Image 1: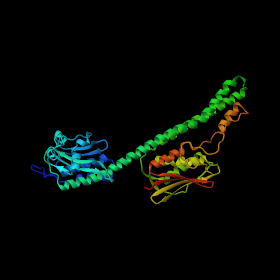
Image 2: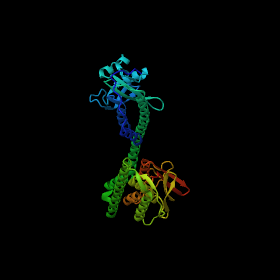
Image 3: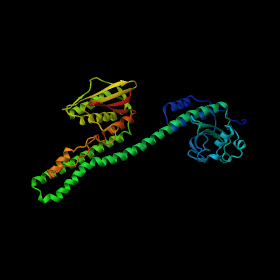
Image 4: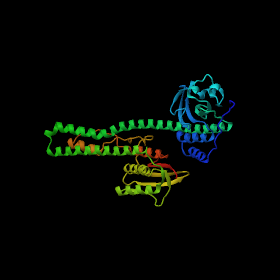
Length: 426
């Protein structure tokens, strides 16, 4: 380190509010900017440099970018957002020379002209490195005046650089996770569109077939067959409309999984409300829920209600009228588990339970399509089609639960099947 010379400006006293702001930034945010700004302010309370700033470094592209600047001079020497050739920077010279501070940058690094052009006289800087010692950036101070940087300031900057590296890595991990989630959503969206086309294909093919037969046979049809055929056509159209409305509703709920507000939720009350609504809509079905069960989870109230409702409705719609279904909850360490189980719940093939529009194994002919075709031609036998699977319901339920930090699993035991929703306890 250079010998710090005359007309030095003494460092200021660190104020309590700056320390409090920095501590809150570390404990309360993973966002790099939200942590960096209080740190730069804190450094101004430690030393009288004109500017403190944080940069990122890309050694492969030989580029340095100024991320955040806190200037107190009114005439900043370093501009936020500036991109600089790494080979020409003061920071690189300092790192390679092992001199982390100077009060005469031009004399310390005579081959480095950028500091002269910027008017930088005093400089202090420490590297920001990740856990594998890879260079992420630099934490620096610069001034047009002679400002000393003592060992204590450099020690503080090194400590802050370590904390910034942690947040930096978390930010990068979050960005990578969001990129993977975005890619996954694109793949899911492509799958949903493909499967939606197939889901709507059956009623639309029935409509097309009926229309073709009516056009070719209308004049020779008895009146009662014409009426029956038109009725079949309307039934197939209503089926297509119902499926479309269901798809749109479930797609909206899937989009909702990206905009959840997590808070403590009494999941026992949510189960009570869902079971009550299902019983009211299907009074002939037996859906049991023990009275008085209670547990709080960290979730979005509407999101968890819709997720549980999808699972219960699937169990009701894909089991026999005599099947008894049970919805319960239990604590399991730091998680709460909601179970939906019963005998005779028909599931998609193993591994495809949460695939959009997954089909059950056996092919069949839907009553709507059989009736529609035979209304026109009593001896015709429509081709078998794969039976309707879960649509988007199970897929949406799982996405909602995953977005709330939980998971959904399915299990089989003989004729019985169960869904288990795990969520963090509040």
